[in-house]
Image 1 (cartoon, rainbow, N blue to C red):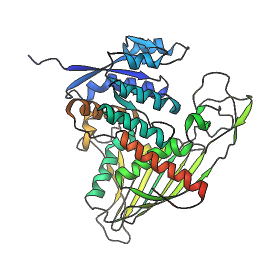
Image 2 (cartoon, rainbow, N blue to C red):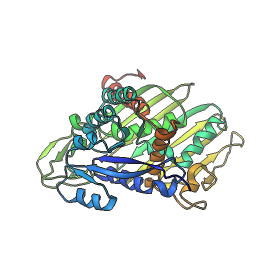
Image 3 (cartoon, rainbow, N blue to C red):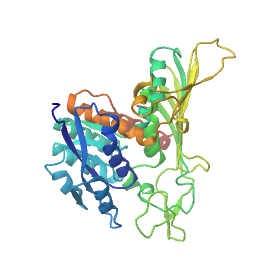
Image 4 (cartoon, one colour):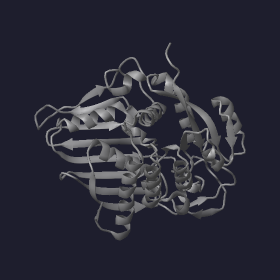
Amino acid sequence: MTPAKKTLRLGIVGLGWMGQVHARAATRLAHHYGDLPAGLEVAAIADPATDGRLEQAGQAYGAGLLTADWQELVASPDIDIVSVAGPNFTHRDVAVAAARAGKHLWIEKPAGRSTAESREISEAVRAAGVQSAVGFNYRQVPAVQLARQLIADGELGAIRHVEVHLYGDYSAHPDGALTWRFIQDLAGGGAVADLGSHAVDLIEHVVGPVEAVLGDLATFIDQRPRPTGTVSHFSRATGGELAPVENEDYGAALLRLRGGGRGLLSTSRVFVGEQNTYGFTVHGEKGSLTWDFRRIGELEVSIGQDYQGAAWTTRRLGPTDGVYSRFQPDTAISMSYDDLKVIELAHLIAAITTGEVTGAGIEDVVRSSTVTDAIIRSAAEERWIEV
């Protein structure tokens, strides 16, 4: 008779969209990773919401502890892992307290409002000897992993240039509510911290380290209406009192990469017509490749040909590519955003139970924050900044 697996217990702090994504990933983990040494259940949820979502989630996920007080959740002896999925201004306090209580961490980027706060979390994790996972889910895409492998195998030769962009329209409407994301003390930064952190991780994970940056920032919508109640960053507050936007709508940077390559990073939250337009293009001395999140299962490649007149081909990913077979049985049956969170969580469970660290952890977010902070500083000082 097969012995029963240990079941780890997850507590989720913050039940907005991302907290709900984390909860769904926890319930699906065994569907796709039945071979992990431990199972997982949602045991507790903390959120101050008064709209009934907490009680509804408790019923949906079977959580025994429902509370408005995240400290109660973190202090519970029944919790093994704390999911930190609330706004940026909550990240440090929740994560540091959880690590000090001996809980493993699953934390969303940017893991605080600055590099200093990310480092505080990292130091707490290290001191406690717990494991961590951070929300750099785009690196989990099998097509992105294939791009990384092709570059590591030398298929593109020496890297000459990488371009990465993360564009959204979630704040494009001028009546978009002035949520915490637009207030510097609460968010810690605008588009660069929010979307740019993903961009930095993609560059460094796929190509290699950034050594210096020259940044430029802009705020195109400098006032927004205050909301009258609890809203998401997709909400409008038409007619509300106008107040200043305190951080950037747009950020860009020229990059110098280790090994001599160059790069361009650009990101915006206010580009009309751009919904989750995330991707990168890498040019090497003997080939190129490009990936677009909106075509998640495809990688465009131009390799193994002459230097001039080279054609592009579409590589459609399928069950022979990395973890794809855990989600879909055939080529071109698309994976999803939520699938990437399941992969992210599986890496954490493996690290907790086997000690093998294969996913993005808190040190990766410290690194990305170091680069995004350098971009912001470079824009202010109008000069190149070494990272």
